[in-house]
Length: 265
Image 1 (tube, one colour):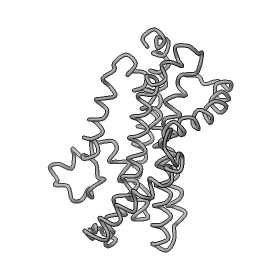
Image 2 (cartoon, rainbow, N blue to C red):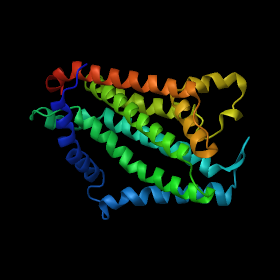
Image 3 (tube, helix red, strand yellow):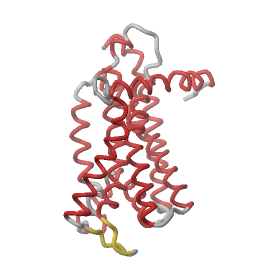
Image 4 (cartoon, rainbow, N blue to C red):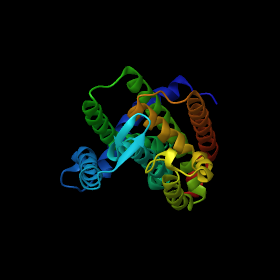
């Protein structure tokens, strides 16, 4: 797999306007338009805060003390939403842009990639708002936390890009993939430690939860954000290998299958 300088320049040139167009299309026809990119995560966080902190008053017991459930939930569910939205939108990106691909010579891989970046831009605002409020409430943030949060988000973007390229190319030939992915993500959501700490899982089910690759991501976010600890070395090696494998597979499969896109679409 060889990526030339010309290909990199083309991505840098074409991706930003395509990303801007994707963001605008998301809110096309709405009264306040792109402002929803900011308002939606704010409303989402406020609703969860009211329900779990003010009404239910749930707290998570850890070895470092009690943690408000809202902090535990948002530290995992916000990155999850970005990943899920990026993969699902990216998986259908080629089918959604079939009218362009059939008529214009255009690097088709940019469509799923712009969907991924659009999803992270949309949900990234919520992540940033949560982190700002949480670290102010905690009284500060360490360099270790900032360092590993950046690494984890970067790995997640690359992983989402690889998965999007893979499923975007396959869904052209197997249209049911986008429907199957919706169900799979629902299963993975409840089989990860987003809604409950991994320590609360009975030992006989813990291995099943840990088989979910996204559990490792969620646990890494919890460790860094909530406990101010670096992710385990084994977890980081696993995430690096997983991300590299999915990115490589996505690029390779997309390149092989895109030659027939125009004929199938």
